[in-house]
Image 1 (tube, rainbow, N blue to C red):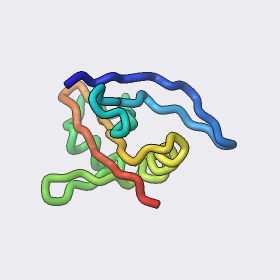
Image 2: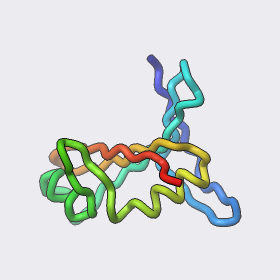
Image 3: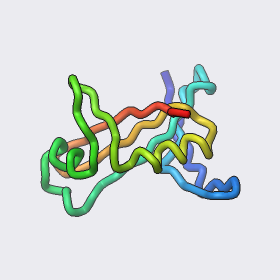
Image 4: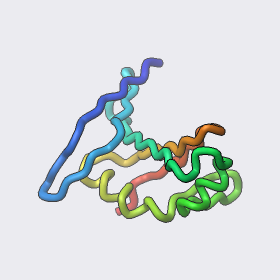
Length: 104
């Protein structure tokens, strides 16, 4: 399976946003999703769980949900016309991916 990541830049419809990238599987273009990377400088030496919690992410049953970034993510999904989003939180101690789906 080959994954393609494109960087679309600013998109406007009359409001605008930019995302880190659009991930698309070569075999199934209709299942593209947004990739956004957050690397908070203040959390660069903290554990991923601590940084995720500071940013409003909540862990329930081993799955992460998004609080602080939720309005931004939903707006980006609407503007790009996609329904899946991977929020990647990066620190020097690792990477945490929070998966979000579009909610009309």
